[in-house]
Image (cartoon, rainbow, N blue to C red; front, side, top):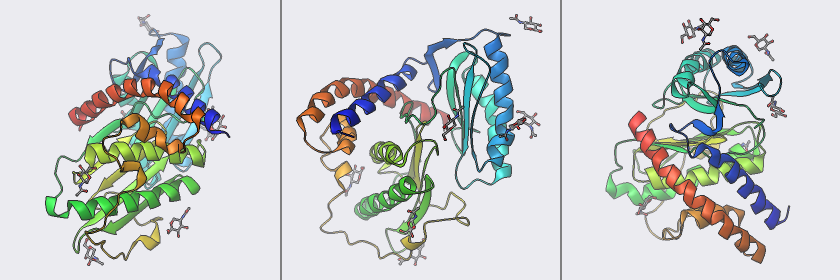
Length: 322
Ligand SMILES: *[C@@H]1O[C@H](CO)[C@@H](O)[C@H](O)[C@H]1NC(C)=O
Ligand SMILES: *[C@@H]1O[C@H](CO)[C@@H](O)[C@H](O)[C@H]1NC(C)=O
Ligand SMILES: *[C@@H]1O[C@H](CO)[C@@H](O)[C@H](O)[C@H]1NC(C)=O
Ligand SMILES: *[C@@H]1O[C@H](CO)[C@@H](O)[C@H](O)[C@H]1NC(C)=O
Ligand SMILES: *[C@@H]1O[C@H](CO)[C@@H](O)[C@H](O)[C@H]1NC(C)=O
Ligand SMILES: *[C@@H]1O[C@H](CO)[C@@H](O)[C@H](O)[C@H]1NC(C)=O
Ligand SMILES: *[C@@H]1O[C@H](CO)[C@@H](O)[C@H](O)[C@H]1NC(C)=O
């Protein structure tokens, strides 16, 4: 794919996902319209939601399906965090049905991380249009851990954090769309990381989604003892305590790890140049300096400004709900 078409694809997807931007509540799309009580759409929706807990938990934590005929057709998706056992996955999806209905009582399109934002171990999503295998990055909700990192270890933390998350991103986007791992950043402290993409997107889209999430994660939570970014197509999450089930398939070779020295530290490209706009930093994942790239970047820039506004409200929302 040429860079031009690559960037165009990204832009199209951003425009597409901007439909969430006018939602009264983050996670409910206002632009997709509303359904009325007892309509065929609402009955289809109730029916499809009720199948998600059992189907989702039986299919390795991922399930997408559709029901009904146009214009009352409903598409739905269920995803559990990759380390969640089937029973807990079922419970999370089951209680999220109530959550998504409460959050978005009549919207044709909605997304919900359940069973509540404070745990976010599963995700429910539905729409009146097909969305499978399309990478979507909005709404992007950030949920910071309220506690700050001890400032004396901030430098070591930063370096280790980027190293760890890079490895996890590579692992997830080249494989099962899920990766966990940990690294020491001082003699006594570890960073535990988790990344996941929905299995329906490509490895390349997974990487793009996670790279953007990583930029947001360092922004919201790079001085915190934890935090997570929740996007429709991916999540990125870290804590200083073990918060996932490491018994299954944790990326093995990350430990033991020599704590990095505090000197001569150059952060990875994605977070260098703090003064750059979110726009160029996010788009820099597309890389390289062809003329076409910059022309289209300007158009994207305008869109990303809107996205940035939305993200700050999303961050606020995350904090309020956590
Ligand atoms: C929906 O249907 C139920 C029973 O079928 C009925 O009691 C209720 O009044 C209906 N609601 C609306 C808004 O039409
Ligand atoms: C999904 O669930 C429904 C009802 O719960 C069931 O009839 C159907 O066979 C399931 N589909 C799959 C693929 O498991
Ligand atoms: C699913 O959740 C509802 C309430 O949200 C509860 O009444 C029901 O028992 C749950 N189902 C199962 C099988 O746990
Ligand atoms: C570490 O990262 C945070 C957030 O990304 C930044 O604010 C801080 O200046 C960095 N600190 C060091 C010592 O690199
Ligand atoms: C994940 O990383 C570990 C260690 O770097 C490696 O052994 C493993 O094969 C990787 N898995 C994938 C799917 O890339
Ligand atoms: C890493 O941190 C753990 C505590 O989280 C500690 O027990 C272990 O000794 C540390 N390992 C190294 C190599 O520093
Ligand atoms: C479910 O996901 C697969 C890709 O994983 C896709 O090909 C299929 O069209 C999706 N089905 C629905 C109903 O969205």
